[in-house]
Image (cartoon, rainbow, N blue to C red; front, side):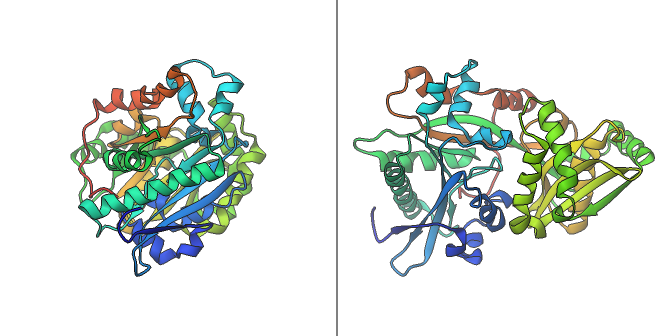
Length: 397
């Protein structure tokens, strides 16, 4: 393990503590924050284990969440965390049931939802000390995978600037007889800078475009009214709207599935929620769910029916959240992955994400190498913003 670093396994982020966890994850955003982690561990479809690296005095230096998934049903958007489904998309052909099964159980490292994962590590660690701690953690990741019988291991949707350091540590942890991970280009997080502060030229220019102003005016003139509530006040209303949206794009999710999904988030996340409800008369015809965190507004979900006003999507997921960020003194609106063209046209910029995947032993070379192939989401992001360019960012976390 090296030096005086020890790694222990815990079952809940509550055992680490909110202040300690958020201190390690500072700067990593809402989807690595304590509330999101506390929610993510509640799903019985996953066996959650936190690995915590400490020095000889017991001070936490770094921590990472892991989730063992045996293939139980999850909301369709979470299949983006299924290694076999990523391989299937990249290869452009259906995998057989046996090929899917070969990846299970899968040990997901860093995150299982939110499209943003990382090791939470002290900003004070640099150089060899940081490398030693990461190596100790990935050594325990491999040991945990062996104890749990995981067929594949995957750390997904981490900022690209993390990949080289993580891969080197994982390779060191896998020696001499193991196999290191395969780098996987995955996606991008679209981020819309808010007015004030370090507003980007792209966002400022987009805000002045005639189309943007027209979309806002048309919506404001047409919409009946928009109300703001907490998630706990609207679960039964917004669940069916999201269910219909998921099915529109090919997902199998039922309205009841989405109601349960939102209800599961209430205990841990309600205090951070900010839901915009669009009304036509007494009926809710559209919504956007956002979460507020010190570094910005995070747009999590949205849904609309046929009665929604023109440009509802852009107003409830981009324009009004941007106004909210400005009002609260927050720097950005985090729009997440997908629909990159529409987001770029309104001033969003990319933060590129990638993954590291250790495929199962014994799978075909085609499957093992599938993760090095750029998938459709990554391709759409590159088509929108051009070739990947390193984004100025804080040091690796």
